Image (cartoon, rainbow, N blue to C red; front, top):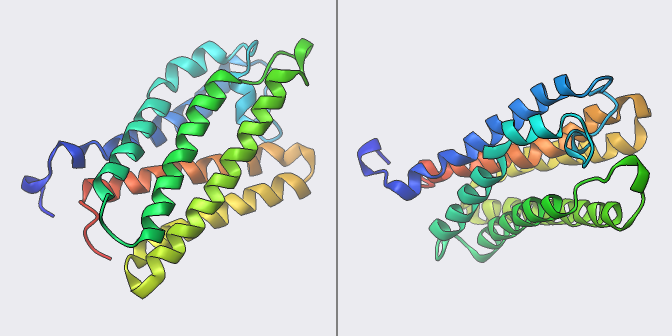
Length: 211
């Protein structure tokens, strides 16, 4: 697809890249407002918890992250309607659902302060995390299978495989690595999802041309 043929719906795919860049900036700069925060051992979600000193800075920097990601992946779903096979479409739709669950769920149930730790809000935060992880894995597996079927979209399947591998490495690492390295592996998982959202956005920008 040439630049002249790109319409507004294609250009909206670039919001996926904007989302990734905004998230990266928030992860890099928000710790500066959190004295004593060790990124190697602490989760990203700690930066946006209710009473975190970095919450205000995080919110300012990451404003474009959630909205841009949601718009991009939703427009991707609109664009692919009636295209590809059912498995590939279902995988992308499920990935979009994961993004919505993440955006709404973490917005309603951020980590609480230390006083109320372990209460209903934190329980729901964990439930959202479990749902996001399950939806992420299921969606990426469907995209891999659907993309490889009859070699329909092998390049997208490869990107999905990379995202899934990084995500699983993060999940395994957070469970097996020493707590002093928890934050490193946790970032594998969160960047895998945000990065693949950017990949889908770039594919949309190019009209999902190629295989």
